[in-house]
Image (cartoon, rainbow, N blue to C red):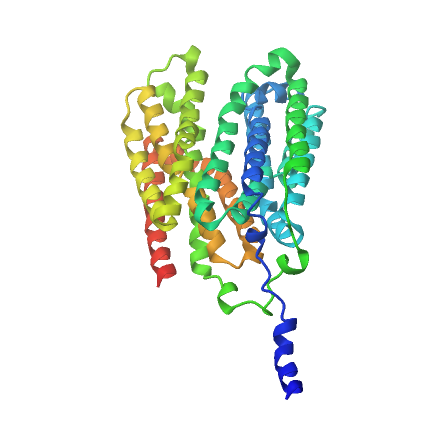
Length: 423
């Protein structure tokens, strides 16, 4: 009889405790990591966007003389970074699932610090374009931050955390051109790139020494059926995932579709030729300013009322906010409407990131977030192309109507995905 008791009790005595998930192990670190990620995203995007005011001057300094060629090469050089990020974001997300989130942050920060400094030593426009492309290929600090914050923050706070992170990135895009308008006068154009590399270097050091992560390759790199409940291994609904990818692309497509013609449009609204570039810059910045004001709040609403509701509402409201932009008579009216559009657009990325975490198993969250980042930057590449084509063939006002219609149609797609996900 004692033998029987021993044999029955043995399995319980040697049973392994259920392993804690990645988020559970890192719950004590996510707030500090969020602060560092916000700072790092801010500094890297300041460095990437600060060249906007003087990029044509640098292209001319590198030997391009024709005005049309300067404009063309400036556009190619600026877009090259976002193309590179769109191409490699899924790869870095997959590697984050395999080797941890912190190594991807460190890789991005160091890579971008080095490449940004090398841009300041370019000898010709071809090297400039190549280095901007490499900055996108090896960089992506903001993308890596989204993966870390999106997987470490508690589920009930993920929307708010991603909203705060989005605010830091938006602030970087807003402040960058302002910094770029001042630093070249003090440091010279090449010196400005070295200063940008130094800023990213500071973010790299903070990431190395302050960011904490408890990553277990054996359990975090792949899903284990042993010891896990069937519910913990999610089979993604690829139709819902596809809807998320399309929505992520629309975030920057909506914002960037008007960029190629905004200076011309502002000029048609009566802005004086001497202040045209400055006024156009203010109008462009208003959407980022509006997004900064509401990103965290809308992320918190996603935590409270559900991400799909916030996504659908933001898509429809942003689409409606596009339409009156076609009927303005003064540039300040356009600026105000762009700010409203930014306020409604800001709720999309935090809500999408939160849904991505819920759509797949934890071991594949980084991969999906990487694809979402790729879709987002694809919108930044495709948006200006669509806006330029529509503006040339159908007129400036048609750009607003077409973009608004796309956003409302995407809202319908999101509503369908919501009903499918909740079925």
